[in-house]
Image (cartoon, rainbow, N blue to C red; front, side):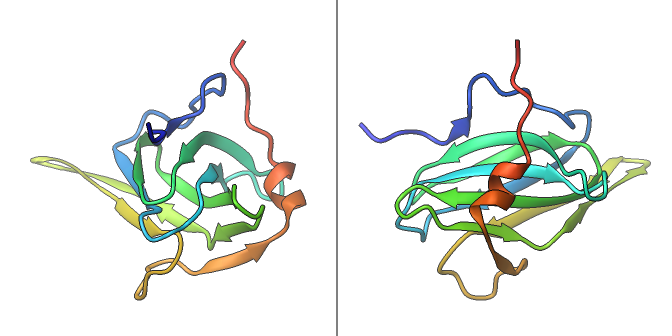
Length: 135
């Protein structure tokens, strides 16, 4: 039975009071990934706000994210390669008919026309931002 994409148990989900979402598309990748949504609002002190596992050939949507600047950092399970996206902004605007918010889709590998550039990263950069574990 194949594993399902999900948040990792034991890690706190932060930045949960927004309406924006980020769908991470790992459907063209041949490796499972461990992924961190990292807030870039803290300058050089990056803060992990979500941690999840996305199997190869699957997608996962991180929902109800607070507006702000973020990046995705992930490690491919198959070979340990670490990558990250460029920083992106999630925003919200209140309208008469509700809230207009960002609904971002990010392909991780193998797709053309992606909206965010993927950058090489090293394992230290992936591990340097530690998620907050729930007690």
